[in-house]
Image 1 (cartoon, rainbow, N blue to C red):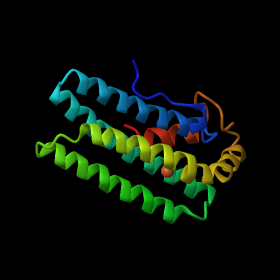
Image 2 (cartoon, helix red, strand yellow):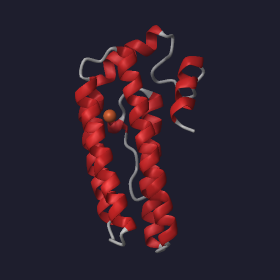
Image 3 (cartoon, rainbow, N blue to C red):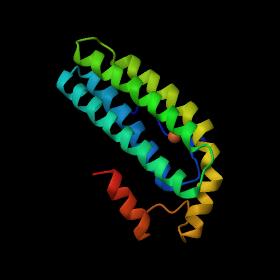
Image 4 (spheres, protein in one colour):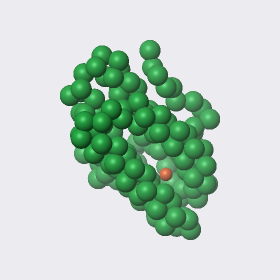
Length: 157
Ligand SMILES: [Fe+2]
């Protein structure tokens, strides 16, 4: 059973972003499973993937905000960078043999809910408008637009 489920209240009204947030939640669930079965290599593996994915997601989000001319881009970037430092510190502690996984999961969960519902919601309208100008429906599940497709491919390898 999933430890944590995505809820509609987490939606920022932009499907491509919601899907990335859902993927982060999935990583946290995978981490929870690996932890339950005490497979340390797997835990390490997922932590590395989670960090990498989160960094890509932040860069992607920043690129959309930049494209939209979001005035609070720099403060939002600062929040992302501070969080990257924080999860990298967790990663280091794990690699030094500290048992931080549970703490990392709780921290990520709390941070994400708060960040999604406040900071991310703040760029919703301006990014939605930018997408609409490019003839992209913000709630479009599969990405058909070439520009957006390229952008996703650029940040997620
Ligand atoms: Fe964000």
